[in-house]
Image (tube, rainbow, N blue to C red):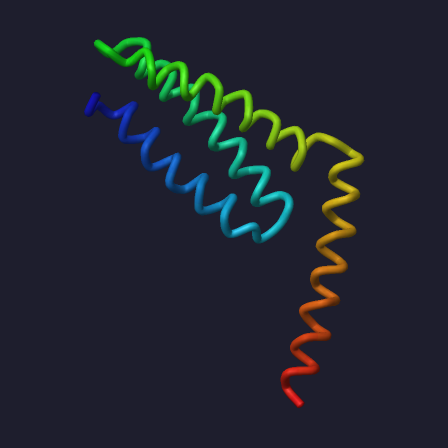
Length: 104
């Protein structure tokens, strides 16, 4: 389990985790979940083709479902998109108010 697929999956997992944790925007977070979904598929393949890799395959099959739910929430669901957009607007307004209050 030290081939190019595993390296791509490992680097992709790190990048996806950074994108989701940074939470720059709905689109960036959703793209992070999309990348997580892709690398979960790579990990499932790697687990199924490796000796004793079944636990890795099962874990990432479950994570794939969770990540696809994240893709739905952040990139596809119209209602959730509107909720997130409204929350981002409120958060931006709060940041501006705090910056204004703390600069005085």
